[in-house]
Length: 609
Image 1 (cartoon, rainbow, N blue to C red):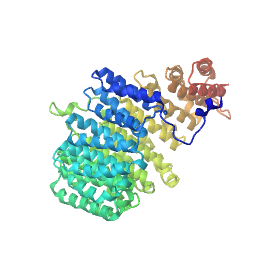
Image 2: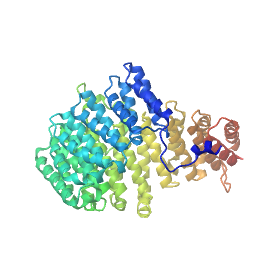
Image 3: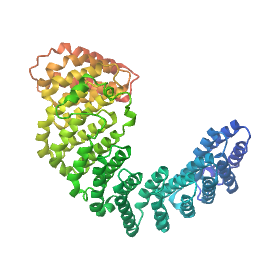
Image 4: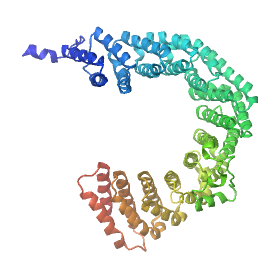
């Protein structure tokens, strides 16, 4: 008995691979070399299952054969077999010895460099998968041997090989920055010329690799790289909307996002140059000029987010360029001052494209990217420079309200997000006393603009409106009292509308609950009756999140109907309580309920009782 229990006892020595396990994997390897693709697929699928087991173990020779077979299957004629082989790679890297990992990396790189186009793509994916899983402790020799070959591959005459090597180098710099310290000068010397490549795909990969590199560079190399980028931007700027100018602006932006404060010392040279490029691009109606403006704004956003202290002297200029470009729409005539565009949106929300003739298509218009970048820049200013918000609020708020009539839905969502961030900043500890009165004075205009947007058919737009209303109700408790009469009918319509999505109904219910909780009952009483049936209908919905939120609304509604201490009310409780009770009791009595629904129904019933 004692000897029989010994194998189960802990042992400090490594456990030998079981004969059954070796035989099983050996059988799988044999089937993986079958001519029948179905056999190869099933065998690779079985291997994937074996690799997921903690008990998987093979001897040295078995690991070598298995690694060779997986590399071979990456070139399989069947795409589904290739896909399974790629899935096996990360698991295999964790199971086999470092020597076999190095052999796999070597063979994969050879396939990338010398293989056919189909092999090159899957081998590149496989190599990046292996590098993502190699532990730092075992990656030294692998990375040291791979980096010089990648730099050689970047100089290849084949654009496809150059692109693959740049992508793999980016992964090496991201995962193993400390292991390439001896090659940093060579990497920088190889990457900077690629920014001037005639191939846009090569320049794009070079930009991302430069961003990954700059975090590891010593000061001397870092300063030299920044100087080079500034010099190239200055040289390309007179040419206007040039693709090279766009690339170097993207590179500076990538450096700013990756290295943060290290770029702060160079901002007095960088920011004026970028702002000048942005100003020059506004006068160009070409697509390349629009692209330059977009990337200038993205670079400014990176500077604000990553160097908030150093960017302080440039806040007025950055705010000005953001406000100019957030309304940049050269293909659309709009008048923000008299509200005519808002009125048009309210009456004819779907007819924005009809006035441009047959030769115009929104697919040709890329100016929305510039407006989106400008909205994100304004968001970064609000988030990173909270102390500056009181000084810029009176400029920001009207400009954002004017852009609520934005015709591109994704840009409108960013405008709503920026406005929400501005409202949130009003409640911050350092700015609350200065901004809350200002926000109250702007509230009628904000609610009027939001009410117009509630007439739109877009679910995303209406959802953004209710998110912003929730933020207003949270920041200004009781502040929406004068507007309840126009907001509650909109809430009722949204809940009754059969085309409303589940996400929209959840947002509407959350907004309603917050308004009920943050306002005096007497203000709400005249408007409650029309909301009763839509809320009860949501309690009976099939989606548990809608049900749970509707139950919470019922609890808030109960508090409004019978406040504590009691207040005189014109409402007849008999018109509300029985319907609420029946709806909540039905949910409480049901056995097959989600846990969130159970908890909400118990809480709501307690409030009702």
